[in-house]
Length: 203
Image 1: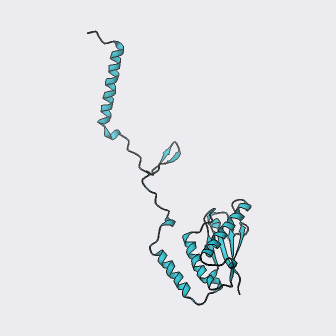
Image 2: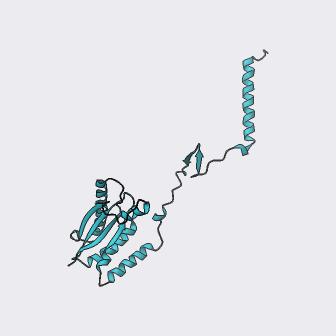
Image 3: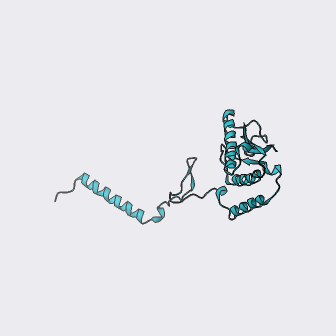
């Protein structure tokens, strides 16, 4: 038998070393790095990295969207009590509704309030209400005027769906021109993103 060449011996030595190293890794499970838990935040060279949860884990809804047991029944009972009343004051059909940033859609709570208001308004067919849309001070004036009108229209559309006549509603948008409060912070902006309903005519 011919002696193995130098390159052949070197190849055999490399294979032997590789097998030995693999065996050492298998014999030391403590050296294996654990998987990063879902949703864990790590720091990578000063940069925060968010690790997402697996796709089969549905995220929890925001706290504001969680259903409160008995809430629907309580609101329905309140509306039924309003329907039974024989007298209505003008103050009972005036309200202020608030909106999220750059939003014109109604929340479920605002819908409950408008439902109760519509029950009252139906008893006063000769009363008209002014629906004014407002925004906070951020953004271009033209855009804010449009956003304020979209908010007012959302309210008017809902009231119309509850049986209120268009002739009883007048819409107007002031955009950011008439803030309810002044200041430059989140609380101030939240209070200025609103729709105000006021009585403008009574017969």
